[in-house]
Length: 378
Image 1 (cartoon, one colour):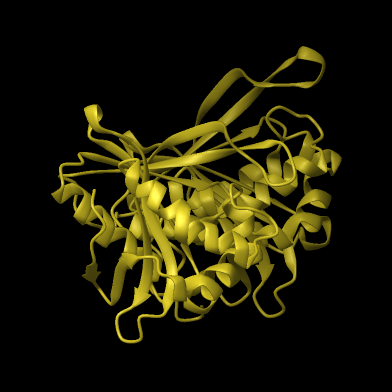
Image 2 (cartoon, rainbow, N blue to C red):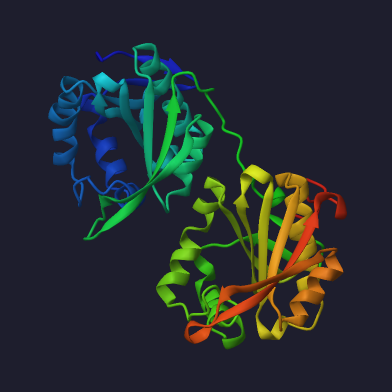
């Protein structure tokens, strides 16, 4: 590719210039940029910005890739950077990447730049573009979806972590004949950010929920119903909370915090695990902290989750399994409309190598009223 200027959707892609030095240094020294682009020098100085503008970016062009400054159409001020790397001409393949300056975030700059560069790359003969994101970088994953990239898988330990170690990357791909986006998501966002009936509310699980989630999942009665029934360590709960949004965006599960609708105090957790997209079926699970049990909240929670699942998500069937001795959970499911379908002998791993029976419950879309959207109380 040759250096050129691309203008589209409110952004200008142009070569970097000397007068971008201060903005490049400030943007690349930003903690969020540093966190998710581990290959950048740290700390990032104006000397590093000068090297990039005078040597690094030109080298990218010389190697067959590209390195664009993303600039405002009106002022031409630097808003970020984007480019192509890992170009494999015989495969018609390249990797696309980007960063956005702190003063330009939340304006759709990354999506506009990614779409513009992808369209240009396809016009020059590229057939396949890969976009790799850190698993915790949900904002970047939303950009990928908005720009027409589809989830393809996880590259394990594919990138070094700043400070040591390695981390996974999520692979998103767009082909030349794919629509420009946005990609329709399997699991949409909650209307207004939460589901509520005025008494209880469900919102997406997040990094701030580690403490109550750790308390919940280390309680003996909750551990006994885990699969397998093993006490989790805090690191596992932290990872679950950090990656909840990513799993939601990818479409594998919707992990939710159960909270008091009035105060926001956390009461427990629930999840919709989309285990069979091909058959339109998903599993649900739920648990409450002790102080919130015995109030009928679990029934409210399952009702809300089921209504959203068959309404907004469009599922045809929900299922849940309980240990045969978990009568309280079975009553909750039956109150919502789930029907007992059978006993699966020895389905669950038990303590000390034993196997436990599981009672299977099912709910069809026609058995429940879909939750109206948007949620007026959200």
